[in-house]
Length: 297
Ligand code: 6GU
View 1 (cartoon, protein in one colour):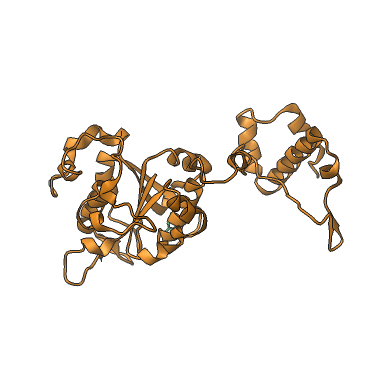
View 2 (cartoon, rainbow, N blue to C red; view 1 turned 120 degrees about the horizontal axis):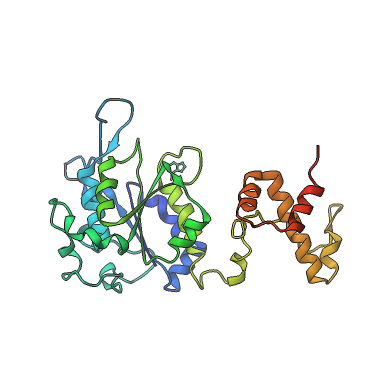
């Protein structure tokens, strides 16, 4: 997978180099490019934003900067062609072609200056997924992470201030699959940290990135429930005991106990997830019995 990020704060994305993501890069399963949006600014102050039409507070990021930036990052041209990949020696242009090898000339032919991209109309089912982090987006979910983990190329467009001129999104959507996504009901200063969150959720699902492939089959959310508690040695610690059932050696019993713990925790903390699972037919009669037995007045 290749992951590109366009931002006015490239250093904010440094954590992508570390830990799990760094390992994925070293093992060749992931390539990451971080691009400073100001490379596409054209005036001598390198400005990337302007006052909003209709008035109001804050600034809006300029389409005349974002348009060419996304064009170049998607095609691997212009300033994006020379971007140093994080911890990898692979230049952008040496990438295996993405889904559509058709356009000749290393991607330049895809585009026609600022004349619009109407010619690429049906390319929506190919090419990158362009992700625009925004508190006004639809909620990022584990399902989205799983879907994106199968993509060859993700491009994240980080807005700051009051956001990006909507026409940048609308224009990109003519040619690519664009998703405006929020990571939760709170407001961040910009999309950078949201990109770190989403990148981590996606990359850990790429086969071979997590040591133990089974471990994400039991993740919270993968089966619609939160994970229950986990314990390790010592058996007693600060007067607290590990639940007896975990020493029974009876896997059936342990599995049933874990399911029960997951159900009860989810009921307690995220009752709406129980409703959703019930509506989808994901609760057995035994599950309902567990929930019933613990439903208190
Ligand atoms: Cl994706 N971006 C920003 N700026 N704020 C957010 C967010 C994203 N998700 C929640 N709050």
